[in-house]
Amino acid sequence: MCRSTLGLNGPAHCLCGPGVEDQSGDRASNARELREVVFMTQNKQRWCVTVASVLMMFFSSGLSQAQDGDSTLRNRLVLPELIQEVLARNPELAAARKQWEAATNRIAQVRSLDDPILSLQLWNVPQPFNVAQTENHIFGLSQNLPFPGKLGLKGEVASRSAEMTEQAVHAKERELIARLKQAYYDLFLAQKTIQIHHEQVELLRQFVEIANAKFRVGKGSQADVLKAQVELSLLQQQLPVLEQRRKTAGAMLNTLLDRDSASPLGLAQEPSQRPIEQPLGDLQSFALNDRPEIKAAELDVQRSEQSRALAQRQYYPDFNVAVQRFQNFQANDGFGAYVAMSIPFAFWTKPKYDAGVQEAEAAVSVAQAQQHTLENLTRFQINDLLAKFRATDQVATLYRTTILPQAEQSLESARVGYRVGKGSFLDLIDAQRTWRGFQHEYFKAIVDRQHRLAELEQVVGITLDRQS
Image (tube, rainbow, N blue to C red; front, side, top):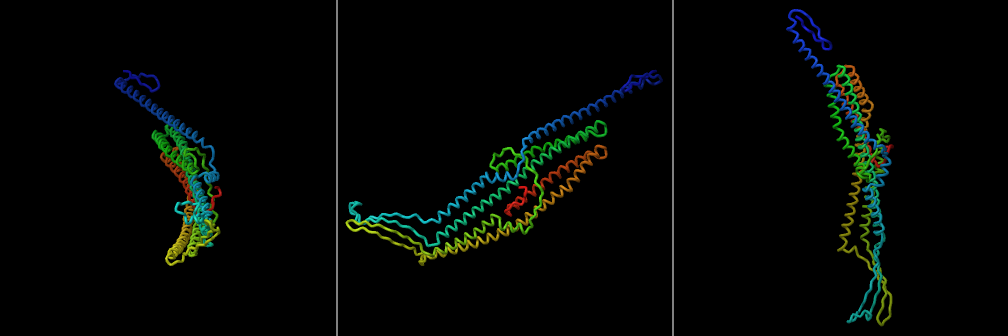
């Protein structure tokens, strides 16, 4: 009997011997099954490589489109220029300045005398009401004259009110600058987060290539390739949310600048981490001397004191003087004059002036208490904001000097270890996620630091950041 042996890649060979014919069919069947398994494995490998290549082309296309979209952000946003623009264009500030202008124009009104009064009197009009036959014509011109000092005090009260409105304008300027800086750094964080996202997509693309290369040579598993593809898909899913945050931050910045909310913006610059050189005592002194709200509180006390002096001056009488020309029918003509005086110290009118003085004294006490409260609040705000600023500054410094370098070393170690087969792909993905998370936390700490600095500048009333 003869039996044939079928090689996987060669011709059949015949062997003679007893019992060979019984085994030839089984061996031929096993050979065919082995060829089918090898063919299916090769097809699956080609399918994985094809899918990975298509996915890489998709993500690379998305990345290039995003980068092309970002190419419109060529102009860098310069913060000092934006500050000048917001001070020139913001409608809230324009309204505050108009209020200041209105309060200034009120000073001349309260300092002025009442309008003079021109009068004509006709006496002894005859029965037919013939004006030409009246027995007496009196032409008069009169003027009310308040007691000396009253108009001056009214003008001082109005002046203090106008100066308070001026300080309100300065306070609005500081508020808008603080809000602008916060919106600016929010935009920086949004743009930086998108940049980190694209960098992570590129990094994962490299991981997929490594996993595919190892899988092709039989040193990696198909599961690693699929894990990398899933991680890429999850990362790409975050891009619409990041874009929405960037658009929101840009819309806020455009609104403060009185632009269309969808106006294109450039790239916000990364802030420097310059320390605050002034000690706490100096910051408090600056605030008590320069903060517009405290200046307005001081002016409020002065205005209340002048209002009290004006209320006390109401005990003095006002006057009315007049000159007259008399024309008499069939008689000699002549001139006349009179002086009238109010009596504010009459016992039936004096109580209202007493109440006015008491009201003014209470207003003085209220203004002084509010000033003292604002000074205490200012000291607390400086302590609180300075502590928060230093805490976020330390966190950012720790990320920059320690955490980020360590995370980058860990990521590189995991990548090298996986490439040479000494680490798992899961370790590589975890290291990549950690690196991405630390990057985001670092820039978030920087932005939080700048937020606290902007608030501190608003409270102190001076600029502490040399960059702006």
